[in-house]
Image 1: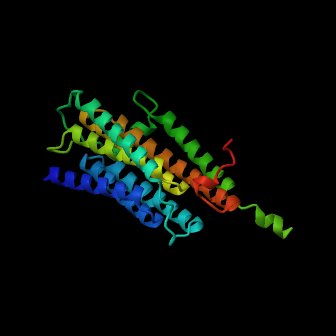
Image 2 (image 1 turned 60 degrees about the vertical axis):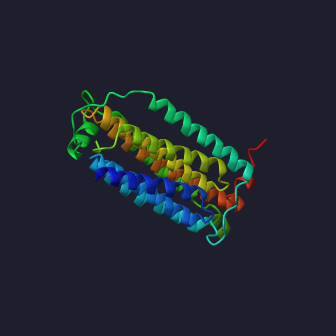
Image 3 (image 1 turned 120 degrees about the vertical axis):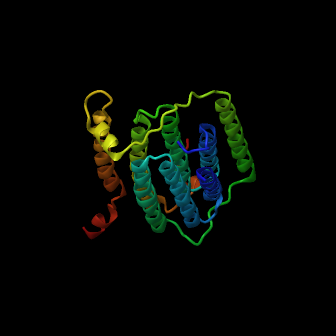
Length: 171
Length: 105
């Protein structure tokens, strides 16, 4: 049963990601991307990473997609289709991608992974303890670095996107 | 792990999504659409971390934590890149890559 659900999600993800990179309408393209991100969240849930799936759904499917939609509404002419790529570019990019898929699949299909036998479930408790522990296997330093990075990004995004023209006009 | 699904199938899925993202990055001619392809690439990378954690080292949680950091940094990158896009649109009223040639030569 889980196998069929996985194959269904995988098929949906591949189809929608192809549509997301080939649709000429940017609004449709972003909604197709939303389905791909939800599919990845579904795979996280199937692998018993509940917290990670929830974060994927809230941060990616919730936050990032809304950010994209807001920017698209601010700057794009939505009804107008995007420029079609040249056929030569499409062929070259498709060739490189097919080659990459072939090389990747060839590389890891010849490698025999040692699959661990035991089953485990990662709870939110484990994640929180690991994030804030400064002992062995603790992640307090990257946690603090990411929190500083998010603060810097917040300030930077406001400063970059702020309009300076209106103030000059009113003077 | 998902019963009946081996690690190879999930790795094939993430490889396909990665290279679809690469294809989109090469062919798109619009800045926001190129950023969307980067999201695909980052997501497939995060999926690989999680799968390696679950199938090879189920006792550890490093893959989980690194995926969380990837998600956080991708969200930060998106916010900053879209701020730059909005500023750029104010300056040149276009997001097509052929119009962005200030740093070309």
